[in-house]
Image (cartoon, rainbow, N blue to C red; front, side, top):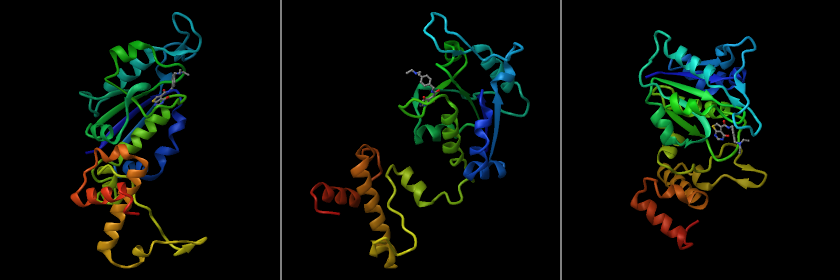
Length: 251
Ligand code: 9D3
């Protein structure tokens, strides 16, 4: 099922590059994704096309006015030929719930998604109160606005649309789905600046290679993201290997 994305921003030009390459481009060309980037200034009512104003109560900085955002969303939902019911209206903000693979899966089930990209100090609270149905952050660091977050969410969801991925059983997707970090990858040359490709990968023994890669993924996750192991789907053999790591008996 295809997804239509609507993005509301005062910087529409920022999206052209990212949406013209890779998986997003492929999905669009295949008709599995369509993306409409809308300039919020087009929905401003005054001749200067104002989208921001000073905050009540003072304090400096600027706040995004509610009217252009409401007008834009209402105009989009009135467009014929696109879903208008149960459409998530997602405010991108540092105060939102954290974006994860689980959230990406949840969003990718919808045929249409509307994103509101804030700038400046943020958006007028009435947008949150009366218009947005969801609020998402992509992590605990300060960005200058919601544009990069919208790009990240489009990229992460587009690849979950059935038919977009070349091979849905590709190792990388498997690994992510299972909640483990990736095993190390190598290509030619066999020795590069003194660092050799692990012998097992040249052995031709497929079963051994599968086992080695699984163990490397487990080791990496154990070393770098032990938090992920709690949720990962692990086999008895995985647990045995992890116990060896804990005891310092494996490498
Ligand atoms: C300098 C103002 N900040 C005070 C500590 C608050 C603030 C307001 C607006 C911080 C960032 C922003 C703009 N950021 C976003 O709109 C944003 C965002 C982010 O900053 N981090 C992670 N995810 C997101 S989604 C949208």
